[in-house]
Length: 180
Image (cartoon, rainbow, N blue to C red; front, side):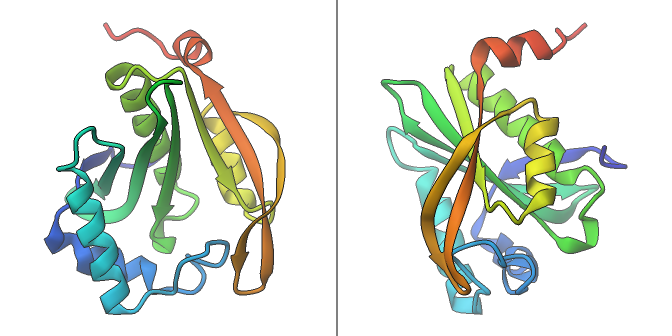
């Protein structure tokens, strides 16, 4: 668990420098189709993420994750189908905080918002099979491994497979204690 509470706030244009502090690092984007980002690529990503908050209906909810006011990562909840009530979560954590529960805290908050605020039925996430840390986070979130999708993304070292994890609203509610 993270040593200090992790808070998520709507991303803002001014957050691009914080985002760039991890988006520019090769080890952070090793298993991703993006990065390492130039400053311009990070600015463009943040601008698109900020703009997504003004769309109707809103599909992307991109958050800056902070611990005691210090930006430590990001989380995104993407509504993939309103009709089928399905969403996808993703997260990134600055490597100086890897292994400290920040990714799990971000994921937990994204799932809470997906199920409690957006009334989703199913939320899923993917990760590269080599990214054992991310797979552990998804397991800690109560997500079930659903299988492997082959060659889902072309990244720097070739085609990447994706491990698929998912959780249903009844599973989430059964595992989530009621407040108070």
